[in-house]
Length: 124
Image (cartoon, rainbow, N blue to C red; front, top):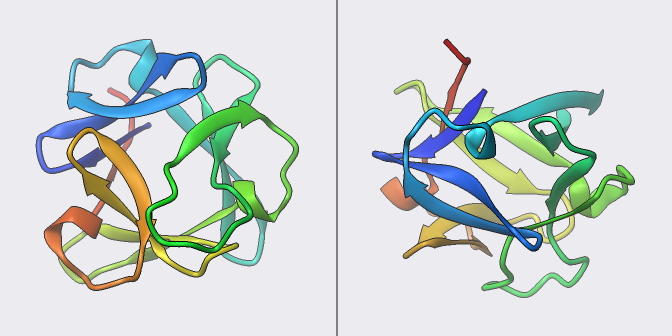
C-alpha cells in the first residue's frame, strides 16, 4: 500500500530516510502494515526488513525514519480513521501524531490539521 498526505507520498529515499515526494507508484513508496496487537501496526518498507521508527524520545519534532525491524513500541503505530476516509497516525512512544513538515514527517501534538491526515491506499 501507499501512504499519502495530499498529493505527496511517503517515500523511502535510502540511508534510512523517509521523505514526502510526488506519488509515482514506485517500490520506494510501497509499505506493508503488519498487525501486531490491539490497533497497533508495524509499517514495513516494501521488499525490505526495515520499518518506520520513531525515537523513544517523546519530544515534538522528532523525524520518522527507517530502521531494521524489531517491533518494539517505537516501531508500532496506530491508524485512527476520520469520517472523511483519512487517518491520524499516532506514535506509541510519544502519543503524538505524524505530521508532514515540508518533505519531512515528524511527531507533533495531534491537532486534526490537513498535515496530519493520511491516506492509506492499496496497491493497484
